[in-house]
Image (tube, rainbow, N blue to C red):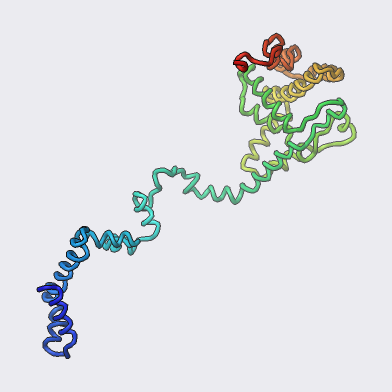
Length: 319
């Protein structure tokens, strides 16, 4: 039967009054007759008209392709995903077993799963941020001794950095020392000056700074409060080798700047160097001080007999 003949017959059946023909069309055709007449012929028409006649794929594949291209899932996938959550669908789309982390994301409990991270953010995050801003204020806190020296300038953060470098050098010279403790001790030795300011020799005659109280308040309620408090107490007692080396690093950094100023002709710096050297507590500190006093502050870069210094035009620049 051709498509047009079948269509005419269907139209005739649909236009008749209820009766045997109607029963056959609407009732019996819901069974095998409908499957054969409507279902199979629809497939054949679909194959001929929509698929095969246009050179496209068979209808079953065509239906899946059309559904996928229109943003829909194939029927089988729709049946599987109706009862799934968006997270499960996302896991399947990534090729992962539902509930597992993707391979390219580190499964670090401290970052992803551990609730302590959230507790840390709520309890300590703001406190640590305040602590960091306070420590950074040392960049804007001047060292006031240069007021009486008459030349030079430096802030507390610059001095702290120089002292830490000195402490590292001393730790390598001595060897048998806890380098981490020494570096931490030296790094924070002037933290209290963020609240008290730097008091020079003259200031201390008339002003009392509660620097230890300021230090304690600066580290209060921090997760590393106990560590810094213990290290600070050791610094103040001055009995351990680390505390003595840290105190020497503090003086040696100042001596480094005084040596530079003295070399550049500032006579008063020579006198200050004399007294600073007497404050040193360790043999390693005194050894390093002697090397500093003999050295040329410009020696690391200024090679006086260097041809480049005499003739700044390099031969290769002229070629």
